Length: 329
Image (cartoon, rainbow, N blue to C red; front, side, top):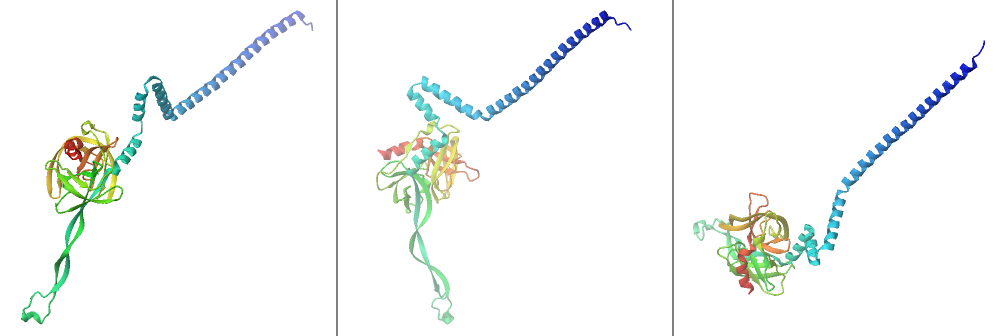
């Protein structure tokens, strides 16, 4: 057989060209595949990183807010006068801190009032109901009877009040002071007990003033009840239920300039322009102070609604400042 060398050379060259092209195509496909795979993996990493970043940001939003606030304070320190910055920093103090400070300021001047009354004492004796009748004398019948044997002082009521001067003047409610023959004892926050005398009872407003002997007593600062706003935080202090002296209850101003009918001691009284609060006012709190977060007395606790939850009323302090100032002269 005769082999055509020229033709064979031609076919071999054609094969080399085809193999080279196929190799190039394969290599390109391989590179392209690696690029696609790399892009896919990179995209997943980016998505995963982004999701983690979003989660970290969400979890640390509070930290971010604090950092933002610190930055704002830093900016203020750079740009604002010292006094303005000081006032704004004070304003930023937490409400809890303000409340604790205000309570510690007012409690030493709040007192518990105990009403004492002479109550008759009786003894039991046995007597013949027929007296000296000779007909029944032989039967010796005896029945018990009560006979008065002097009097003893007993606690018949309680209330609250607060010192308005270092020399012992105390504001309370008029309805706390009942019978003029009763005796009134004031229990100070220090635990010392003093006997008090009634100095003044107002005929129109449910307010009275007591006086105890002594000096250098802690006393309250009076606020401005005309500046009260709905929603403002206040607290009441008093001898709750006549057992828990200096009890503190916190609430807000829930109403202003209310007109109510108050009942107590079988007496009804119309109270006008009083403050409404949801700070709990319980029996025994009458006469105690209603106080703002600056530790200033803005009202005198006077009544509560028995048919509701935490609806109490206080007499605005501005309505009695003239009376107070008269005794502070």
